[in-house]
Structure formats: structure tokens, C-alpha cells
Length: 227
Image (cartoon, rainbow, N blue to C red; front, side):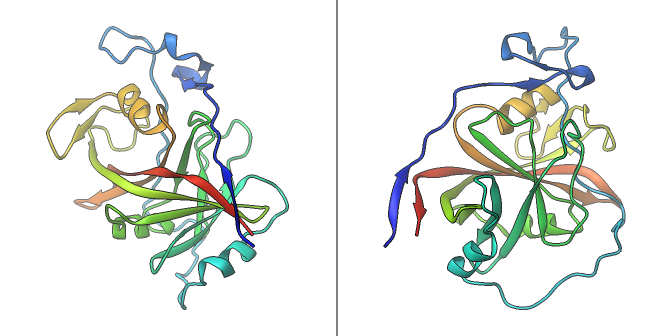
């Protein structure tokens, strides 16, 4: 029988500053006079570093994928969107904030998002290419390693041009309204604040795989289900 567990979140907040130092949010300034620079992950390469072929075949059902994602611990281990993808979630090694999996059908949880925000990163030539198929209203299921899953509904997306594409601390231009944002503002928008899920990959344009950044934002439906 399926039962529900009310989702609880932590109010702890962290941010990443220059030198990848973790400090409280009172030390963050997003203005031109600040010496603090927030680190954002760069989630694309110009090639497939592992030379891994794309995989085909039909997707498992949600129930099947929950079973496949079982690891015995409570960390998020899978992310699922019906008819679109079923990806394994792996964790970044300690202090390797720039690490992104180079394995097809894997996404990487960004350890520097605040505790109530789940950030998932993927290269745009691997799992990240499926992020472009997502639409407002789609349901995303996060599965942990003990058989629980949580539903999120996509509420927004943003496409940002990177002024210096290869830099994780570059300025960004919002392609919807032309607004210029620094890395601190982008980090705050997508990896801080109220509970939500952020999917991030890079946008390829004009032959540059790192030309821009795509962010997909989904907000939780406040119930976790378990069999």
C-alpha cells in the first residue's frame, strides 16, 4: 500500500564565493562593487570525453525505475519524466564542485545548491540534451535509494547567454528580456531560495558548445510517496 510522507526542508543556506569558499549569504553581494564571485558549474564539453554511444530502447515505467534506482541510502538516485527520460543521479566527489558525469544517461547533483534546492547538472551532448525537450507543466520525479519519490512540476525555464562562454564566473544575458546578470545573481536565482529543483545544461550556438546556459525550474508537489 502506498503511503505519503510530508516533505520537510532545511532552512540552512550556503553560497560559493571566489576561491570556492563556503560562507553565509550575508557575505554575498551581486553588485559591481563586490569582490565576491559565485561559482557556477560549466556543464558542457565540445566532445564526448568517454566516447560513449547514445543508448536507445523504451523507457521503464516509474515503478520499474524506482526499483532500478534502489541503493539502500536516502540520497537522490534517479530522475524520471514520463515519455522523456529516466536518468541515474550521481553525487559530486567531495570538494569537486566542477565535476559532471561523462556517462550517458547520468546526471550529477550539484553539492553547492542550498539544502532545500536540488540542482542536477548534465552535459548538453549527453543527458543534458533531453532537458531541451522539457515543457512547462511536465512532472519530474526524484527517486531516492530507499524507494521514495517526490514529484515536481516544471514552472519556468531560462536561457542565458554567457558573455565569456568558458568561464564559470562570467556575466550572463537573459535572452528573454536582455537583462545582464552576474554569477551571484544567477546562482541566487537557481540554487538558493524556496524549495525547488533546477536542471542545468549548456546551450550550443555558432559552433560553441558553451555559448549559453539553460535552466529548467520545477517546484515541489509537497508529498513524498513510498511503497
